[in-house]
Length: 208
Length: 167
Figure: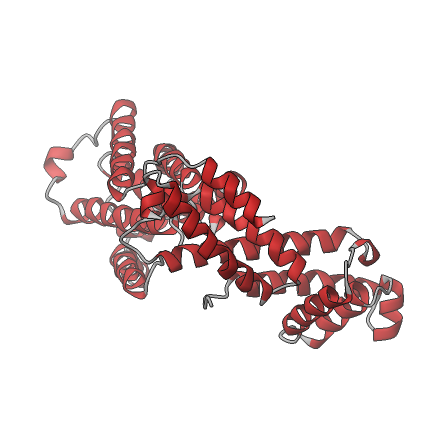
């Protein structure tokens, strides 16, 4: 029976366009630009952007979210191909970036500095980050459907995390908050939600 | 596979003919022979459908092994789901040797479960007892038997999914 199947598969053979890394990064870049454009067109930059451009917290949250978006996107790419693993080195880099992102907020909490900022209504930030992340999430799920993730739910979760980081990066230069505690908590929450959504959607649409 | 991606039918045929026995051996170590053949064909179809995902810069064996492992875990997951909704006597066994192979594979999996879960699965799914009969025989309540079966099957599926060494 396998011999007949092999005959059929050979008869069905046509040249294919291989999935290449540059295609993925091009898609990721376009999705990221679309997120940034969506934020700029809808809510714009923060009013004092020029004045705070070189402030440490603004630089920190912009660069940290960008670095997380890039590393998590790499994880999505590796998770989309059979036979490639996310190695220990990759996880160490991610852990280091997460530490850079969370430790300033944790220190603030320990010192009880500015914890009152957590009483601020975060819905605008949460909503904008999640909305901005929908474009890259859709792009990554589209990629995963074309590719062959051997752990679809895990790949979808990574796609959600990466999309959340992209959304956070896009929103970082509008958000008026510069408090480390606020950013650590309310920039992370949308990513976690999107990870759960990404895992569910990938399980339904990206199995093969 | 690189040549096959460019449409070379001779190379593709040679590749599939070499891969097919490897896949059959891969699955035969994990399940009954008849099922191994079905899963081999399923995997060949997946290889054909997803051949555009292979990167020639990476080892082919890692790529095909990952696909085979994925198909195997997916098969186990389907068995777990089917096992929760169908009665054991509806599962056909074509020949005694197939049943022996399947039983040996399942026994290896049951050995890593907690004793109560393994006992519940063995009594209901393998020996064909009803839930009530298994409850009486094991001393577990009816609801506990059901919970142990559900958790045991889920744990078996997770163990298989997280298996990272590929032969």
